[in-house]
Amino acid sequence: MAIEFRKLEERERALDYIAGEMDAIAGFPVTPRLAPRARPVVLAGNTVLNNIRIANSQIGVLNTGTIGSIDNAIGLVRRDGSKEMAEALKALTEAVATSRDLGDDKRDSALELVSAIASEAATPPDRRRTSVARALVVDLASVLGGVAATVQLWASYGPAIKAFFHLP
Image (cartoon, rainbow, N blue to C red; front, side):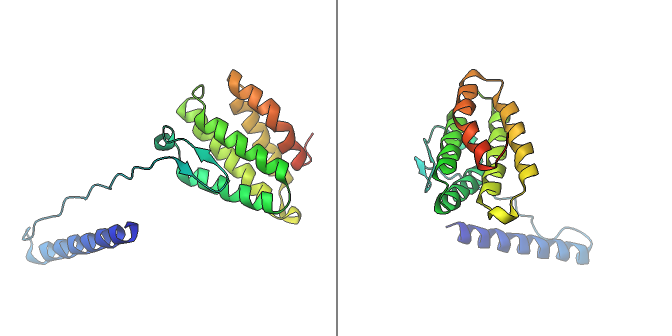
């Protein structure tokens, strides 16, 4: 469905371009312009990724690309044998995504930071950038520090994340 929609959009853009060229040759508008097509709304029920589960009440406000990259990284971390880190990332992601105490801006920031931390965790140990991970962990702790519910969450899962990267 998505591929067919993209092909249709591409054809419409090509027709619009040709119409513009014809108008330029004629010196005045000779062809009607196409109105931009509205993107279809995709409604989904509960979104179940391989590792993360988020109820459909939160799907509309989340960046699913960020959630998907976290989910992929969790799978890689788990496959490499770091089950504690994978569980910490999973629980942290689900809790941040479903938290009603965080505003949309803080939620997005926290999920982007978790995504970056998860990406660093998924890289091979010899290519991990510990200084980058340290900065990301500090930023995440500060974003989650202002809300009581997430302070407890960070207290539960922060040590596992810090231990994974050998941070103080």
